[in-house]
Image (tube, rainbow, N blue to C red):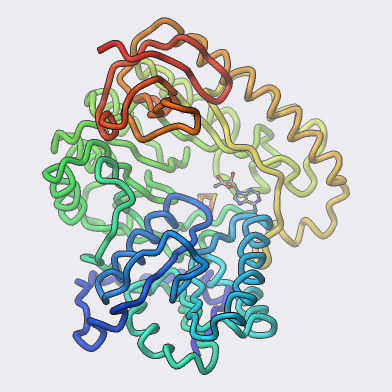
Length: 471
Ligand code: 5AD
Ligand code: SF4
């Protein structure tokens, strides 16, 4: 049993992060033969991409993907810890799985992802959800074949979670959700420790992949017809800092752009590490998309300080103005309302900066206390009612939606390249994304999926655009 420990997970050491090349142990080669799997994913793109590795690993040992959980032989929940509702969804699913296991006692259930790194969660699983076969953390995906092999007898719940991050593993099998667009990890973990955030605990210390490994992955994707790569990290702008090899995100972006993959995206940026050199590179290469996700979290300097964000609203505005100079750029953000002790005046500062930045879009959240983080202690004395926080969120969303609509309306009657991703819910409608990451619906056929087409925008809403194919 290796149990998680958030206090251990907070520690950062100078110990060197090793690169390890994954190799499947022959013992596990066929353990899934004749069996099917279903992986349920919660949370961010990092988790979506981990699921692509988990599915790749399961395929490599003989399992076959099942589109229905109800009759799969193994079900894995890849969980998210970022807010309480993500927790609740995963526990709700564990409740459903209990019934499924009563009907089919041979069902194997695994839990992984960020929740697996939290002792409160693991203790609850051990106390109330004994139908779970094994729990494994975010640092050791590569051990999945071994874990399955050892737990197929269904005897007890095995916990295998490490609170100290492991190596950077290269060469894990991957089953990509799409052939034309792909996620590519560039940096794991986070060292920022914003006081509300659980991620630095669940994902460990900042570890960059070597530039040559990233470039070889991108080149291979491109050679296989991939049109869009998204470089992934909790804080991509910190890329390379831990390697001390003399390169950073600007150098990486430049080299990825030079592979000539048609679209390069990168998420998520932290204002603290955004350099002028990075902005120059984004401007210079047309295949680096003019879309920046730049979380502000709050517009109040007092709250930013309590959040440990390392910038003031004034610093943010300076960076924002530089980014706005990128031609036709679209900038989105994340905002938390109701951080412990946030006053109406603090909140008005947030509305004020939204009025200043006129974001193209934003993800907005009510603060959710995460056990073990510094802000959770402040929350114990928080006097603001949930009702008030919900009202603030409502007011914020109204403003955000007005600006998104305004930004979308500026696109009316213009023609934009759109990467077609699939069929919309509506009949005969397809959907795709512009370079600036705006969702566009249009009439077209399935054979356009994976292609970049020209679309004239005819109607603008807050969250999407309608258009028509012009060629
Ligand atoms: N409560 C609410 N929102 C949070 N986020 C991170 N932690 C919390 C929390 N405890 C938000 C931040 C972050 C986004 C991914 O989730 O806005 O940028
Ligand atoms: Fe969390 Fe802050 Fe790191 Fe983002 S930068 S993952 S909000 S600690």
